[in-house]
Every structure is written in structure tokens, then in C-alpha cells.
Image (cartoon, rainbow, N blue to C red; front, side, top):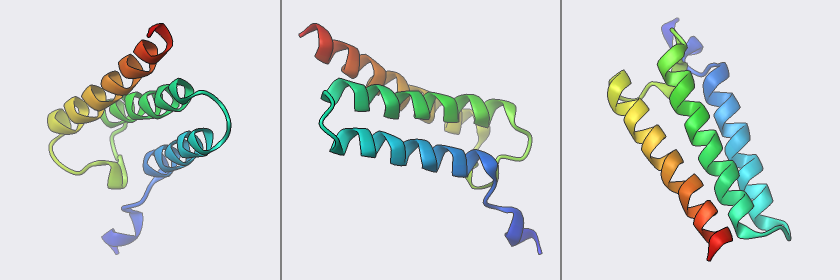
Length: 87
């Protein structure tokens, strides 16, 4: 029954964080805050994928590709949120 332990804590944590980011987006707070929340969640996902030995459904491809993808998208969202504040 290897299929039952696929969904794990890291995946559910990131899913909850993404839901919180979308919730922030749908509320009346500025847009740069939701970009920061979603970017932070993706950066957390990159760190978790790098550190956790059994990431469950968080592991999609090889560890290096997953970390680079999550980290790159997280950095892009955090940077775009920061630029929204400046501009």
C-alpha cells in the first residue's frame, strides 16, 4: 500500500499556504501582499523539497528540478510583489 503515504505533511502545508495566499488575494488587502505570501509559500516548498527525506506528492521530478522550479517561481513572485510596492 505504497499509494497511501504519497500525500504527506509538506504537500498539505503548501496547499494550505497557497489557499491562504489566494484568500489574501480575494480580500481587500493590497496585491503585493498576496504575491509575497504565494512567493513565500513556494520558497518554503523549495526548502522542504530540499530538506525532507520523504516529501510525498511534493516530489514531482528530480530533487534538483523541483527545487529550482519552486525556488525560481517563489523568487519571481516575491520580487514582483516588492516591485509593486516601489512602483
